[in-house]
Image 1 (cartoon, one colour):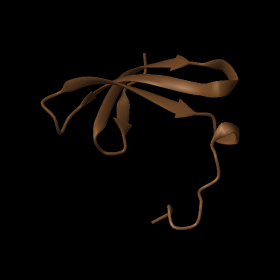
Image 2: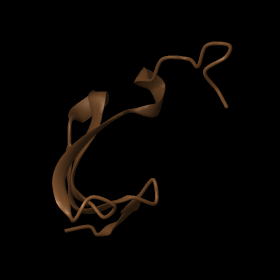
Image 3: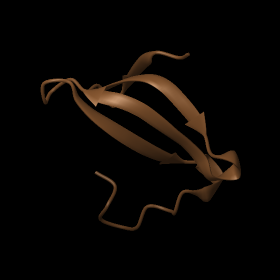
Image 4: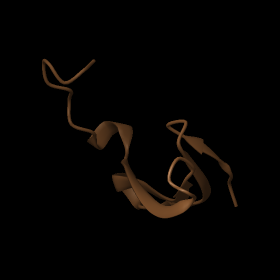
Amino acid sequence: MAEGLFDNRYRYDYIYPRGRSGETLRAVDIHENDRLVVIKRPAPQDAPPIRAGQGS
């Protein structure tokens, strides 16, 4: 079981691999009273490119 912090807001305790599609994190939102959340993270090669104007 992994434990860590994602995006300085979500504390995750388990990572579910999704094969080539990336992974799913089971987490709690520490800014919203430890509300349960699920985060789907794409694999780096599957992420769409950032379009102009979306970056910063």
